[in-house]
Length: 252
Ligand SMILES: [Zn+2]
Image (cartoon, rainbow, N blue to C red; front, side):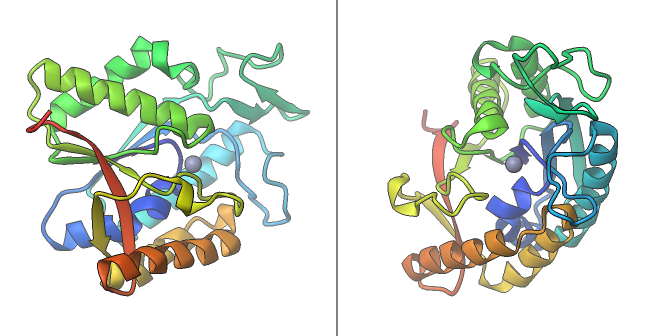
């Protein structure tokens, strides 16, 4: 199960791993926590944050399905939590601002303030208990914005589900913290405890990433190449995806 904030997060952090595990016979479930209300350059003219939720959500949903099909994802579950920013049609509304409508029809609960948001955590716990995945992959806990919220929700839901008797395996987070910014630095992050050789699946990963056309990710693809190669050296292969196991339900 890959439980992440937005469309294209799975492909970015774990696209090769997903394709490889599908090949090995795993059933892969994608859980997307936000409604994807913002952050799409729909007309590919550089306007990333200027489209209203309705328009953005439709585009990103289409891209999600295309990419998931490329990787062989079996099931997509959309939790639909509100993003912490969206465009009202006139301006950006940030959670906490006066013009942010917490009752906006585009999403459910806002995803922010996750640590105390038991409704978000409870819903995630219910999903974990239903599917009892062998491996759950979520964001780094210090990833930023909705990524951190998603990581907190999944982390807490995982721990609670195990306490309540669910048969879960292990919880992995990518050692790569941010993908959208060049200034992020792999040397700052925890060393991976799991390195997946994704050499044979790298082309599929990039194909899935490119299905997210509204993200026009030339720079981030170049960066992913470098990170993939960096960890490939450690794994003695061409490309590897790095994870850190934060929770092993068997040896907790
Ligand atoms: Zn994201």
